[in-house]
Length: 249
Image (cartoon, rainbow, N blue to C red):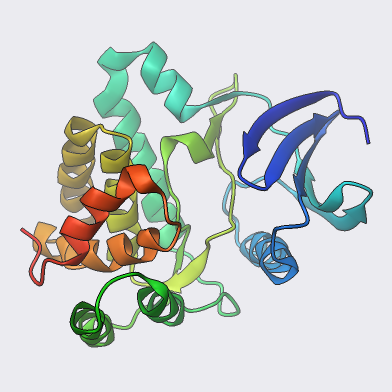
């Protein structure tokens, strides 16, 4: 099939613009159940009033399964932060406000974070003792049912020319504890080799949400273990060091 332009290319998938639509096409190596779950996540979150692209279709094309959503004209927040480094703090504050808005919503049919994290821990390359410690920590965490994006990063925020912010890519959405989502965001900044922004994000998030830093840090070994499952060599050393710490400091 032919599309207007390619917007991004990821492992086992390509994202195209087709007029006023975005078409995410998955290759044959991508799990069909994961594709349909992503479409279902988007549809379920669409039932809240969060600013996300309209869900339009899921279909089998000649190139593979495809998820079709509304195209949002604008730039990613990541691009804006790179273009305007002096505005980093103000961008992060608005970014956190939007993340907290996500956490204020409920979508009872989303998969539960704890179920997902337990599976990821078990699939990780960590030894049995560390896995046991992480399972125990996960089970002892307070049980919440907030909407979690699962990959809330500046690259997944589109800012329109009119200044409206949209959240895209709901593949990893679950319901659970907001601190886990914050820990994932912190981890993603660190993996991008931007510890300065990671620390500023965590400081602002904890202040705005009135959350103890230690409460978010308790989730860092768990989200590090879940990230290890992706088996990215460049990330392994950092993730192993975090996941092996019983009490992250």
